[in-house]
Amino acid sequence: DIQMTQSPSTLSASVGDRVTITCRASQSISNWLAWYQQKPGKAPKLLIYKASSLESGVPSRFSGSGSGTEFTLTISSLQPDDFATYYCQQYSSYRTFGQGTKVEIK
Amino acid sequence: QVQLQQSGPGLVKPSQTLSLTCGISGDSVSSNSAAWNWIRQSPSRGLEWLGKTYYRSKWYNDYAVSVKSRITINPDTSKNQFSLHLNSVTPEDTAVYYCARSTSEITFHSWGQGTLVTVSS
Image 1 (cartoon, rainbow over the protein chains, first blue to last red):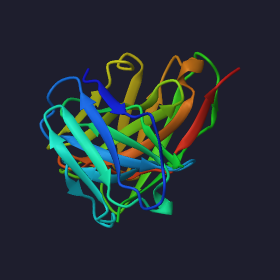
Image 2: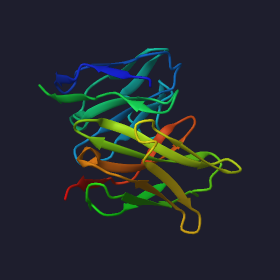
Image 3: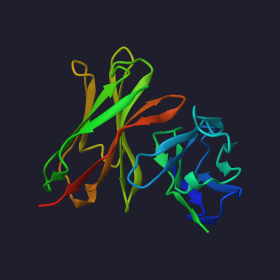
Image 4: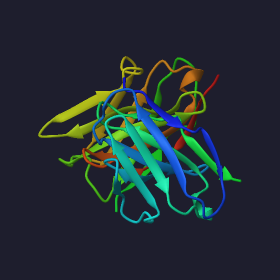
């Protein structure tokens, strides 16, 4: 199985901050990586697919980059609606998720 | 706009079979470009993909190694839905279960509302 490791586990930030979350794969997954946002009691919401493609309707302050084993999700200017938990997920071989990064209010 | 609606019991006894159904609107379970997945989430295991069914001239299934001996995912073309059956459940199978649509390029972009299933006597 391909393991996905996210860092940090928790991130404290303020509205307007630039936020970066990192995801590492245990082996190369090319660009078969997605990012999701999840709020309590809700299903995950797709933000980014194929490492850097923005899902339709997702604000442009979200961006993704990387390939191979190292990936990042960046929120250019954190908004109140962005406080949530973020997950990466590989779809190169079967499907596995990272453990999540909780973005909380500083 | 694809919508997925889950149904099924929220309580299952140990050693019995967990069964959930996911109804599809806005697409067909027989689509040649989509796959129909089950995913679960628990505090101890996080988000865990369980398996999928998909149609490419014939029906295929892929299952996660962790549940492969206990899981069946079936399409129902007459009702445009698909189902999850997980047998011999234990309290470790307690989780929120989600169905989701994926494609090869975009992965899980449509999700059901989630069903909390508790395994307890």
